[in-house]
Length: 163
Image 1 (cartoon, rainbow, N blue to C red):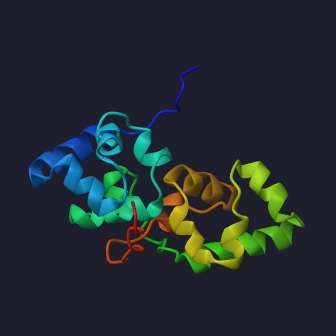
Image 2: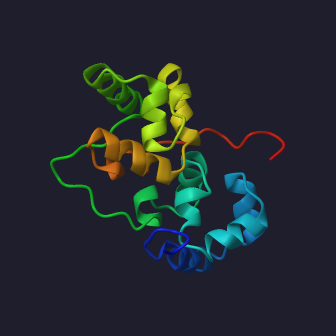
C-alpha cells in the first residue's frame, strides 16, 4: 500500500505557476507564512498541498498567484447546481449532522479522523484546516468537498507576526 493516497499532480502545477510568476521561494514563504524549504516541498510532493498547509496558507498562495484554491489543488469542478459554502454554513451542517445522527463532536471527530470541535464555537477556525481535513469532513456530511474551499475573492487571515 502506498504511503500517501493518490493526489493529483498539483506539485508540478504549483512549480509551473511559481516559475511563471518569477517568485522566489523566500518571497512566497514570507507572503504565505511558511519557510522557503516548505515552499520547495510544496512543489515536490503532491500530497503536501493537501496535508501540510492550512486553508489560510493555501488561500494566501492562491491570492499571490491570482488563482483560487481549487485550481491549485487541481480539484474536480464543482457541479453547477452546488454553491460554495461559507465556514459558518459548513459548521451549521456539522451541527445538523450531529443532531440528526445523535452523535457527539468527539465521536464525529474520531470518525473523520480530525478534531473539529474548535470550529463549532468559532467557524473561522476552519481556516486552520488542511484540505485533507475538508475532504474528510465534507465526505462525512455528504457534500462536495470543493464547495468548502474558499472562493478566490475571500481574503484569508493575515500571516501571524513572527512567522
